[in-house]
Image 1 (spheres, rainbow, N blue to C red):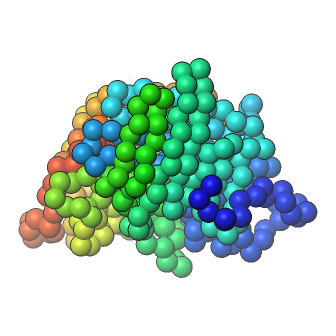
Image 2 (cartoon, one colour):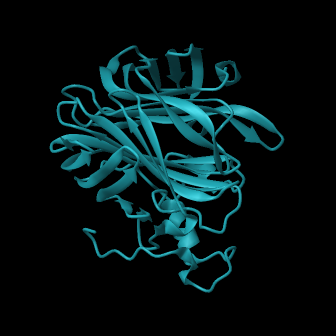
Length: 343
């Protein structure tokens, strides 16, 4: 491995699994860190590493994680954005290790951190191996009162699912051999986010891209979901538009609302607004790939994601002045469940 960072199982201490340590407190303000442990029940945690080559021809996402429901195991999922093909690699729970000194995890021989990823995945179709280094991360802001993209909801202990944005964008260096083809990611661009909790929502929309042509630092992400809440449920959302100059946040906890939402199996049109700004979004899916998603910690639900979608963005203020307008490509889109539940 490239680093000497300490990556060891949480069971290396003799503390009971429910003991609330200083690490448990610190990780609230470090959403990229491993938030769970290997003793949790009905729990999942997964990170999403998106890699795009410089010219955009090659696009892949590696999704390492742990599933602690029925048939507990750790895993690495892989989606090829070119053709929508996916692969799922299983490992023992004991092969999932994480550092308590920062964001650094291992799943078998595969290692993922905020500085690089290194993979060695062996299956019936051959071996996938290589490493990619990350440049400086464009981090989502974390403050005492808003520890990441979840805002104050991060402090709520009974959420079904939590979300974290690790990097809104960063450069790439290195390459990965996908069996007989070696893909170089030099001068390419990456993105990292994650989810953890019990289950993914019953219905959700997720959209993401940081490819806006000449706007090198521009980045966008939006997630809308039906969220269980104290015996009932509500539609909540969180997201951002980073223009390359300024970050604009749109979320339930910021007082923003969904003015309009239209969704089919392949196309979504959304208008978000708050007291100062209006964000209009139109997205269309590309080639779909099948991924596994958690239900009560078990990776038992099949969902579809595309990595070659397109998103049109228009951000204005209340005077109608255009603050940002752009067309994003190589966009990730998931339209899952009954979209009528989100209206």
